[in-house]
Image 1 (cartoon, helix red, strand yellow):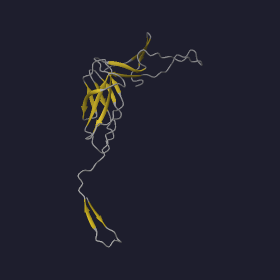
Image 2 (spheres, one colour):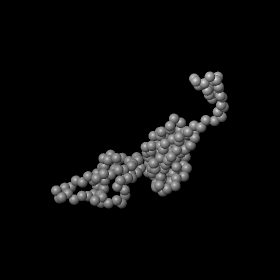
Image 3 (cartoon, helix red, strand yellow):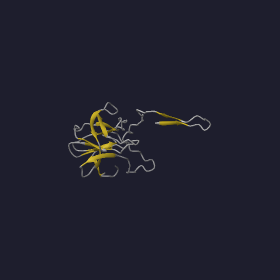
Image 4 (tube, one colour):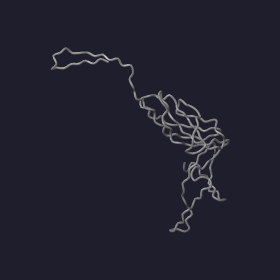
Length: 182
């Protein structure tokens, strides 16, 4: 680094100063948490994908996946991925796991993603996500038409390798609900 002193009104000759710089501090931010983490529950595995987070100009070197058994609880290291996906093939069948993912650059690991959960299954399955098993659905009484027979309610489900899904209320089978609302 060279610094020169010049003063238009000063009649003395200019002076040059030289300073040796040994180190320059650069503030490198960690990457943001991976956004849009999605879970694909499968047979003998749980598969995740996510979008690339903001890296602030410093390339992400890898992603770290953490897993726990309690929602919002402590998570343990599960594995590392250099891509935007991870396949948990160590999941115990029918056990719900809770996951978070972080991104790391050359300096440090960023914050965790939002928590997601999933289960591995040992056969084709359907799992209702909303309403969950055992929930009570109260059908509204139609004051305008006491003989009205149609009621609309929302439901969400996840499935793997099924040919159809039927809605059964009590002992009455209401037929296929395949892809009616996902």
